[in-house]
Length: 395
Image (cartoon, rainbow, N blue to C red; front, top):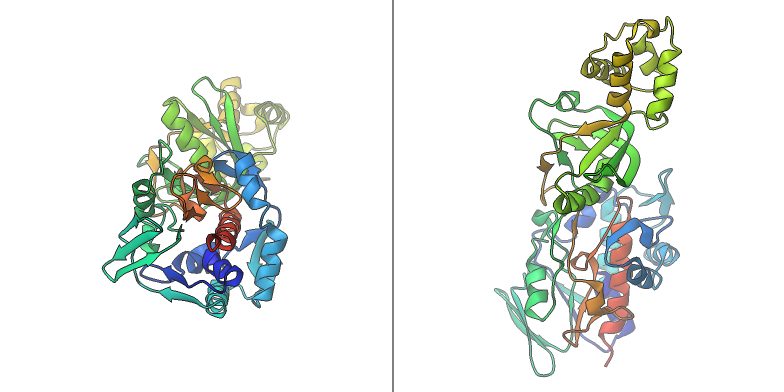
């Protein structure tokens, strides 16, 4: 829609048609941010993204930045508010507000939206493209692929866009895999029994040699299948990528990020008659504190001076350096974005046009760009869609 709106605004003499094959128009917008649509983040740069090079990603982001996004939606009648996390939501707290505004903008730009009209194939012709599906076929001078990746296929992004891109001469990254995805723990793992419990925790990805790769500290949710929440989702793509390259990669959790292993050990030694449970409850929920004591083989009511050195060492490791035996992820049905895609080096980034197939433009998640949670992936959509839209009607 962003590409279509700006194509219509920039090239009013052109006939702009959007073909959307999703069962429900704008489904990803409607479910984003718990139905509120996290439009963007107050501060966006390439450091929040993975995939293609940061230099390439920044080149596109600079063309349509956060201030322009805010102004664009304000022009459409959608005022945004900044929340404590830095996320920007519509003041209505309704994703429908965002979708309706985009649909109205498309209509005002004389963009025709045909829905549901799934594109099955795009073929290059002498001076343009032949686009077809069960609905029929059209001939066009230019095509924009804005199909999404493979995440949340029920919304229409089932990976078919990748096949179209390949048929037109593009390559894909060696791997496509779920990102921003919940992780699974083995049946019977104690974390599963803590389902519903949420704490601010630090998650760290470590190589097989124990080297820190990346870490995230944020809300972490224990679930009936394993782990979810912002920290888990942000970290998931880095863990899955590292695990593929090094099977000995581990995921380590610190349930009390303010404490290092050494600090916790010192404080446990100074507890004296204070119970371990009372101490841990100063930061952790009691249910978690009791469970961690159990995992360390320590009676929750034990006072500090009753702990043996082994018990103290075990408890500090359980609280601050617990290795998590991840068995997998919940897949594309639950992933918010796809890692991998068409590499940006195959595009002219000043217009998002294919270097392999003149007249073809690509934007959004089909590209090898994926961001953290918090509106970053939407900002990539707005920016890359804008660049493709203003460029697509040119000669």
